[in-house]
Length: 479
Image (cartoon, helix red, strand yellow):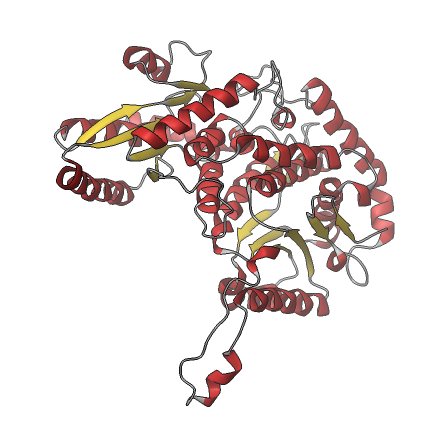
């Protein structure tokens, strides 16, 4: 069995340090083969029928699971040709007309969009058109008055500049993203900014666009959109928030940025096509899931450190935290048995957290698997010149390739962990663009879906979240 899978795209998964002496053994994988086959069949059924075993909505009725349809642009699928054209036209209009955009979303309605924004605004992103972008803000992702004031203060500075230089108000677009239209955090942000900007109409011109469930015609966002003639984008049925980055909540951000939506989905589509079989070393997402499951169940590796070696990818780690935690952290399995399944995800960033966390990874409890992510085109970008020739200690840094040094640091971290039989693996992307970001998003979603089947838990519900939401509503009503 090969320990490194390289797809035709160049995406690779290297699990060498997950297998072997004092790690996961071949006989463990053999014992899990029947379960892996069932997991492959279950995900195949989701692909073909849109059904997951025993999955119910919050109200206890059967609910479809359609995230596997997102990469395919087809009639009657979540992403249709008409929707993509509508999104692209909307994004172009926003880039021409608006000075600032505030996306108001929480959880899956925020985290995926933040990944897209962070990655796209990188200097190393191969932008096709370096056109003018409005200032982008995210709010409603936390009940944080100080953060909201920070956005407001930034907008005020921009408005004063617009008044002085262009003699017109600052044009601001608010985009609330909420299936129900009543989610506390984004609704609070939307109402706060809309009222503030409207009151300051000599400085601001405010408009809106909404992302919500169109079927809820009486929902507040649908009613507002009809009243004010705002654009409305539908949140598709059967796509939970943590899986929604490749649907309207994420694509509306991508469209405003001017990203290539087709390439984003093409990357996901080709990953889906590469992850269909039940033979582990020919299905990287299934292989990844089986190893994480075996690590957790057989080796106590119930913590996963997601460690990209790129600052811009921190948001991807935060997106993955929700995907893993909400999908796999379940009290009961599908048979109703108490299992307390789940793995705790932790975000770490390259050499920053080699200085902060690696001591724990290397010498602490053996309850972790470290998942590295490296982007090959980080190399050959910056070479250091030493302007202080008289300082002998600095001569070693002359000509240093920062990207190469970053990779050496990661390889040293891998080897150090492996030398003590600490579980770790490596994802590699040739570069960072729409296509590879689509591949990475979808690979992680599929891996989680497969692991949910291996553990026999519903990866698409979140009953634990509903408990605190109910308690919050009760407490807020009491004042």
